[in-house]
Length: 282
Image (cartoon, rainbow, N blue to C red; front, top):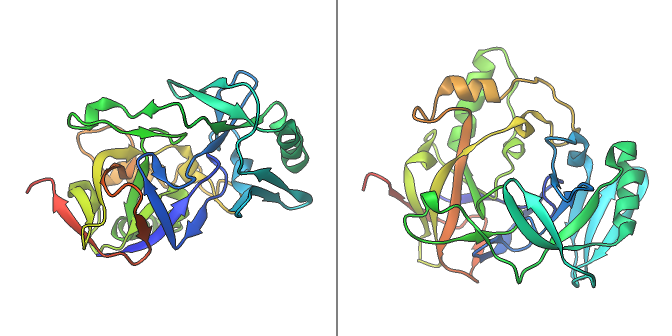
């Protein structure tokens, strides 16, 4: 079993970046969800409210976070931390300390997306602040993350996507790509929903170990085409995931597993790394 994709999302809800390798950190892959957009009340904004965010491309250079969109010049944001007063911003029920980026970014967003982006600003997670992961699923341990929805890593498998797409096609629907689910780590698996039975995933030579903590409940972002920001079939794939009932004890649509790092902080994770899974039943 091996890793087939690694993805980071430096700005929450903008386009992701596929990488061949990344540094494993306790709060997630390097640069993952380090930034996010907030409204005038300092509340997080995602594709749930503004699907057009999917059309903003993101890149990282040695010096800059680069935002790109057709019709406007790219916006270069220095990786060096900005000067300024800390803000208190909210992600779901969590309040986090953040550094505001330049107002030039806010003006750029309006130029790129129009009036729907009015009032938005970009903030960067203040790393001296710790945002803890909910303790309910940590078996007495502790973990933290940046601006992710709640966990530092999201793991999916090719086998589960294949099973979902077979079900969609059987109903006359259209298959969906993996980017609808915005995973960090995609694992090659011939078995559907295998990740729901894994307790841990370890690099074959012991360089790192991840604990799979909680099924990931999915939202309407999965219905948004991540290339065009359109919604081809408003109920899908959520409706089919509910019908597949992969988590009988839970309500809603689930796909993938939220995870935390048990061992290997500072090590490098790579596409094609071979993994060994320990079953929850073991």
